[in-house]
Image 1: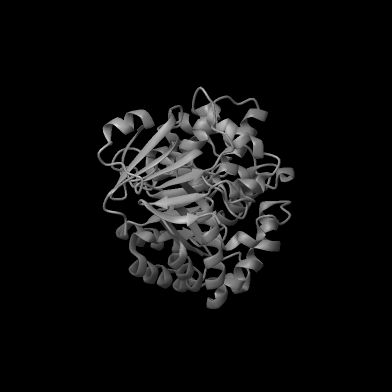
Image 2 (image 1 turned 90 degrees about the vertical axis):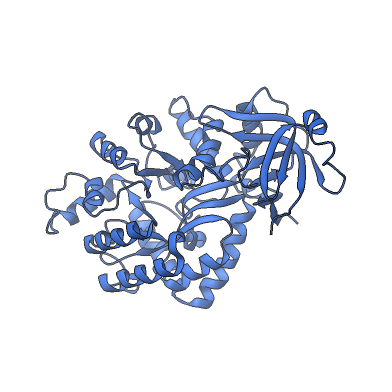
Length: 435
């Protein structure tokens, strides 16, 4: 239970507001009351304003440390933790060689439980307390994830009814019955999750979408990650009754009811103007996964560069995700760095660290409908924040410079991003402390 009194935390505060704006407070003071943010201001002003409430027992000075809102990872597969650094020559081959065999193991309850306990500890330690998560087809794995995840997450079991390994293939009836059961058990925490159009039949997507909509659940799947995937999808659907004349990948999801304000489309790299218009009109969001889409030499799948400017021009909402295990590392700092680097190398302007921070915090909360109570350190929101120790206080003119100094030094040792966070607070409670 959150403390029923004031707590004060001193450090350098970074508070994302938008793509271009982020509060940056040297010698900052984060004021928390009853598990919610009461204020962020300078230590000097805070000492004056809250002098009667501050004491040695309720004030913690983090010294040179940075205080940031905790992360939202809007697309990741917790059951792919063991394959995130496996060779990735192509998406479809990687799935067949490594991912599917690994996910088969999650049928066993004891295995799923052991893995969930370990994975979600690592996720919390990386500073992520919200987002959208894919599990395997098995209820055992979904139950384990729901039991161990900490924060504001929607989680779904992937649905696979065709073009899948025998041991990972359900009948339409099995998928729909399990969807009904899990919605009843978890309500809006459950996320309806067809793996993608290649593996999930139109019947399951259509009927399941209706169930999810009635229950107010989110829906998630993959869309246009690679050209080969798109070609394969269209070659399948031209032979399915009712879909013979579909012009593009997105239209399949439109016809099956998968698009909408509570729909999350992973990747969305290779989309036509017509498809973007469809996504915009239905208020469907795209989740961009730069570390997964990165070149193979950078441990990605080489899927291509996400055109965020084109997506924004089409008025399609988007946020960032790690796509574990297509993405190799859990930390959203690594995701932000990859987003900035890939665009800079192509000469694309506007891919800043400030934008990356916003798209991995508040943007995710906005898509999940949580922006009034989470996503950054605005007054009356939940005190969900992370603490990052620094050897010396960051001197910077603005948030962009401060974030660059925080993130850039680790680019050659990407695994280090997962060790930067020393403390994680959720609703004012300390839920992780580095040993």
